[in-house]
Amino acid sequence: YFCLKYLKRHCHKWFDFQVHLVFAKFLQGKGRFKEAEDNFIKGGQPREAIDMYIQQEDWEAAFRVADLFLPSAIPDIQV
Image 1 (cartoon, one colour):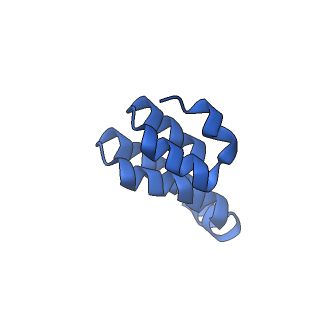
Image 2 (cartoon, helix red, strand yellow; image 1 turned 90 degrees about the vertical axis):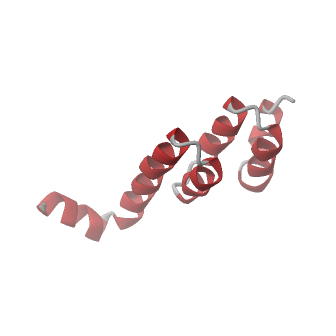
């Protein structure tokens, strides 16, 4: 409990990122891809959202996320 409290107080940004990433994986597993994308972005991992959409063969969504958040990933998206 003390460690969790310490992390929230002193590493809150890192802690928030981790919460978003765990929740994004959960949402992805439930097929709630747009919500998962939002949480991957909030967690600072747009590449995870892009890879999720590539795996789903949703090229338009993958390109949109790459264009907005990680332009260097655009060449990795093949239609």
